[in-house]
Amino acid sequence: MTIIQKTVLGLGFVLVLAAIGIWIFASHNGSNPKTVNATSTGRTSVDETVVRGEGDVIDAVVTYSDGKFDPATLGPIAPGSTVQFVNEGDTNMWVASNVHPEHTELLGFDALTSIEPGDSYEYTFEKVGTWHYHNHLNPSQTGTIEVTQL
Image 1 (cartoon, helix red, strand yellow):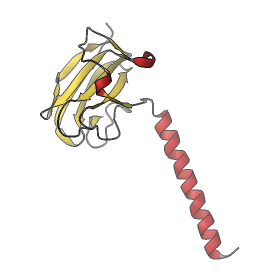
Image 2 (cartoon, rainbow, N blue to C red; image 1 turned 135 degrees about the vertical axis):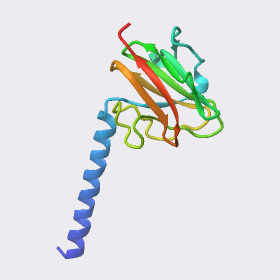
Image 3 (spheres, rainbow, N blue to C red; image 1 turned 90 degrees about the vertical axis):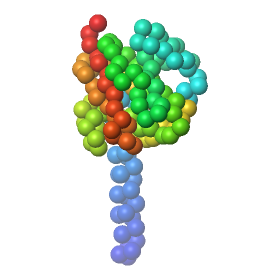
Image 4 (cartoon, helix red, strand yellow; image 1 turned 120 degrees about the vertical axis):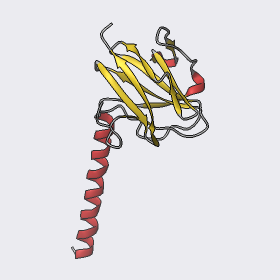
């Protein structure tokens, strides 16, 4: 086997390992973020529940438009509540846990991509706490989710 063949084989092996690592991280990071078309659901408050197809339940909705989240502070909500972040604005947003840019306050609470106008991101809050988040594309745009045992 020549040096070039060994190099190509080694590079292929490294790429396969990297792909497996990315797949494992994405499927086991604990959050299972979903981006969905926001037009399939209605808007709701903390006291209402929206049931979508296939058994998905949205417990609360936060909207994004004009560079801010509404409500700016949501809660209290119970552990296990799913919050849908709907982009009703005319620019992309990217919901992510503080602290920017690492997003480490609540690991897994990160859309991992920008959300286009008309789409949304859902996250199920399992841990009790006060969780701060921001728009990763403009970190000065912030919000808070309060999760407490009700």
